[in-house]
Image (tube, rainbow, N blue to C red):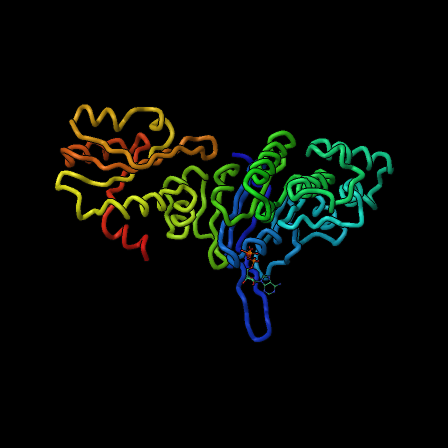
Length: 355
Ligand SMILES: Nc1ncnc2c1ncn2[C@@H]1O[C@H](COP(=O)(O)OP(=O)(O)OP(=O)(O)O)[C@@H](O)[C@H]1O
């Protein structure tokens, strides 16, 4: 097993706001292995930003122990802590660039005060600007750049101190979908080519799905579910996780659309509306068509979609099955270990969608 580069134990963060006490983070244990892209998802106020700020001790936890790169950060001297912090880069939703400095000036900034020559600093910053595709913009000012370009500058600046960890706090939330995809792909490149471990906060499962290997779901300051992305995605346990997953697959919207025109009560006795999920190899086989032929059932496909999650295919399909339902349901249940899941859509599901 790879070593944990981040090891948080029993982290609690309490804020006092006047008379009020806010438990922003409660009892969080979190281990992140070197080289991972680890997503933390939750709605606004769940405690995500507070938790990741603990990783470089920008937020000192009220309780718990923070070990990063094998160093217990709370035990370090101020000088040693400053050094340790350089190994953790951060990027933010609003880029946090200095408007009065050029692009190069922004990227060079974290190196000021370090014992390297001006020309070395400049060469290093230019190397990173090249990496993010902005070498021609070195002398431009940030206000001349698009949102995506500003985030690229922020990434170059975060990498200039050779961090082992890069924390991305909603870095794509202010960007359009195309720019978001380009920035996420750049983060993947940084992870792959430079070996930087990435911790990525978001409120969008789509973001987690496209780049992360592991995910933790936060609610009310706690991690309520975690695991490999493909696992959490295909078998979510907590209601909030189910919610995030359904929003990102469009299955819920499809069921809602379908049941607006096809009433379950109007289906014949030998008909059922079934939601299928196919994971991995099962997405490449004609499972339903095979069962349709051997059992003589009719399949009317109303929705189908295929997605890639952490490199693995995941397919969703909604269909009306007509014919020998007991035999069909029994046959398909036996395919569970081959990555096929089904759910017969009932009135309760439809009611929950409307509510
Ligand atoms: N410095 C602070 N003082 C008081 N309360 C705070 C402080 N920072 C955060 N909080 C509170 O802690 C809780 C968690 O906030 P946090 O910013 O970590 O959540 P989040 O999941 O990152 O949400 P968002 O995406 O909106 O930032 C919230 O209730 C927030 O109001």
